Every structure is written in C-alpha cells, then in structure tokens.
Amino acid sequence: MGIAAEDKEHDSGADTRYRVMLVDDSAVIRGLLARALESDETIRVVASAANGKMALGALERNDVEVVVLDIEMPEMDGLTALPQMMKQDPTLKVIMASTLTRKNAEVSLRALDLGASDYLAKPSSGSELNSAEDFKRQLTEKVKALAIARRRQVGASSATPRRPAGALKAPVKVALHAGPIVLRPSTVAMLPPEVIAIGSSTGGPQALMKLFGDLKGGVGQPILLTQHMPATFTTILAEHIARASGIPCAEAVDGEPVRGGRIYLAPGDFHMTVEGANPKRVIRLNRGAPENFCRPAVDPMLRSIVGSYGSRVLTVILTGMGSDGRRGCEEVVRAGGTVVAQDEATSVVWGMPGAVATAGLCSAVMPIAEIGSYLRRVAARTAA
Image 1 (spheres, helix red, strand yellow):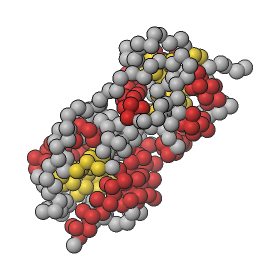
Image 2 (cartoon, helix red, strand yellow; image 1 turned 90 degrees about the vertical axis):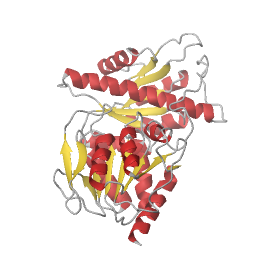
Image 3 (cartoon, one colour; image 1 turned 135 degrees about the horizontal axis):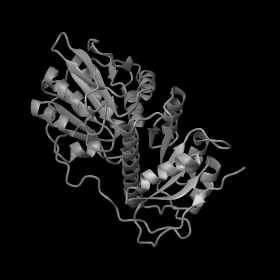
C-alpha cells in the first residue's frame, strides 16, 4: 500500500522560518525528526514523504530549502532521488541521514559527490538519552546552517530560483559572519612550516577531495587533519583521501610516531593531538570532553601542535559550520605560525573559515581550487 507525501499548509508570506522536507520510509522516524526540528521555533517542516519518488512530487509543490533524506527506502532510494532533486532545484541543500554502517557511510560520501551538502548518522535504537539529545542538536544546527547558506546563495544569484505557486517570499539575506577581512603577513616565506594542520566540517569531504587531488604527490611535511565526522565515516574518508592524493593516509593511532609525507586523520569520536618534540613526536588520541560540541575537534589538535612545533605551523581552515578552530588559530598566530582559510564563495558553510577570517587571523583567504597548489608551493620551498 502506497503512502502519500504529506504537504503542510503555509502560513502567511511573512513566515521566514527555515523550510524543511523529511524523506524516510518510516512514519515513526519522520515524526521524531519533525518534533525535533519544530522544537526550534526558527524551523518549519513543510513536507514529508515516504520515498524518493514521493519526495520529488512534494518538491514540486512546496518551497523547500533543506531536505533530510534517508538512504534506504522502497521504490526509490535516497541515492537515486538525490540527483533528480538537485536537477529540480540546484540551490537545494540535502542532508543524508542513515544508520551508522560501513555501507551507509560509503553511500553518504558518494552522495556528497552527487550534490548532497552534509550527512548525519541516526542514533541507534539503544542510544542513551544524551546521544538522542546530541542528534537533535546536530540535526537542528545543520538544518539552520544550510538554510542560511542557501539564502545567501539565492540572494547572491542573479537568476530567480524556482518558486512553486503559493510559495513564501524569499526571506532576507542572513549573514554568518559580519565584518571585514584583514589579512596578516605570512610567515612561511621566512620560516617554512614543519607541519600542516587542516580543520573542516560541513562540506569538508568535497573540499578535501579537491584539495588533496590538487596536492597529488609527495609532501615533505606531515599533515594532520581533523574533519567533524563519526566513526566508520573517518575510516572510509581516509581511504578516499589516500587515493585522491597519492599520499599515505589513515586514521591516526595512539602512540604512533609523526612522520613526514603522511596524512593523519583524527578518527571519529577521538580528539587527535601531538605530544613531544623533534625527533620524538607521537600521536595521542583521547576521548576528552567535546569542544565546540565536537569530538574530534580542531582546537585541541591545534593547541597541541603549537606546543610541539612552535611557530613552524601552517593551518588551513576549510568549509564548516560553527567556529571550531578559531581559538586554536589564535594560538597558532600568537606562536608565529600562519593561518589560511577557504573563501566564502567556495564554502558550503562559511562558519569555521569565516570565524578565523573575520577575526584577523588569516594570511590568505582563497578559493578551494587554489589551496592545494598553495600547499605544494610551501612544501617545495621547504625542500629547496
């Protein structure tokens, strides 16, 4: 028996709440997601569908900003529906939601290549209350950050986006970070870095594939990378990065030595830090309290790297929501290191890079297409 997509009547055109569609074959899950989202007064669930085919029809009838899309559904699954959704509305923001398995993690990362903006692991049936609350917080924050990013994108576009009949008026443009970008002098020409540290979150996997694809080949420095991502996902991300870059990349292991020409990825649910001084620096992993609601987080990685390498640190902050990395970058700059950020135009969410750029911590703010070649130049200068 088929289940019809549920459309909800809009309020007046003055309603500027973020508009969400839920797509999941479980009515129970859709109800849970709807209650979690609408507990935030800035969010409205405007449509609900049981599979991808129904979702495509609902998308035609509703003005949707963000879709929370399940992977495994009858008739049309999420991966099949995704490119068709993006064709209907290229500005749409899609969050892939799935149970945490290797197969679903692989599919979620593939979905990012097809146009999805982010992913979210559903809590298991045995999840504790704090895990359920953490899921609710992540869900609402991701929806809001992506909706804001879409409104900025639509506001900056000269083309008029598709608007179904009776749709709400486009809300006002919303800024993530206000203030000018003031650049600092770079230190890498005078004192090339001994280590490269990268932090990323929402949109990070896509940005990392571009960066490391451009970086192709050996790099003299070790690269330490923290991407906000759950366990299982980081295992697969490391494999993808190794293939894209041609540089050995793996989830970091507690106690392993830090060596040049390798990429160390913080494993899901562990902060990654560095301990010791040359020539005996080692990786340390811990399950300390989340920072900026994240574990792994960028700030503890940067603090430890500054403690171990001093001024010889080059930090790159890529696309991501929130401000994780800003405090760590303050310590990098205070120690004499250099910070580079991805620009707003190429970021899925200009939260993390915007936080460091508008705080006056960056020596450069550049498109993702230029960051890989920049790092290659830095590495070559070090080797020269």
